Image (tube, rainbow, N blue to C red):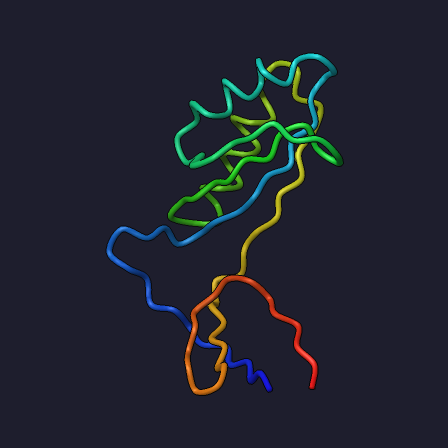
Length: 114
């Protein structure tokens, strides 16, 4: 049996307040060029070339949602050969899962059945 409890997670000293993943569509054959530029942007903590719905996935961490939106709109979308972006904000709450009396903080969603 898994009991899910949502709690507000206090921010740690060096922890950012807002985090999102940005899917980036590029002009074909320009993924590496765009990836190099994305990785240089302040606030981008990770960026990878991927196959599937997007050409690049970037993780952004900022102090506010407005800062994050500004980076996407004014920096990522303005890179030459970027065709479009899709931003997925992470929820600010952390889930605590109680498994047999043990509490585990996690950012993942767990599905359990009896």
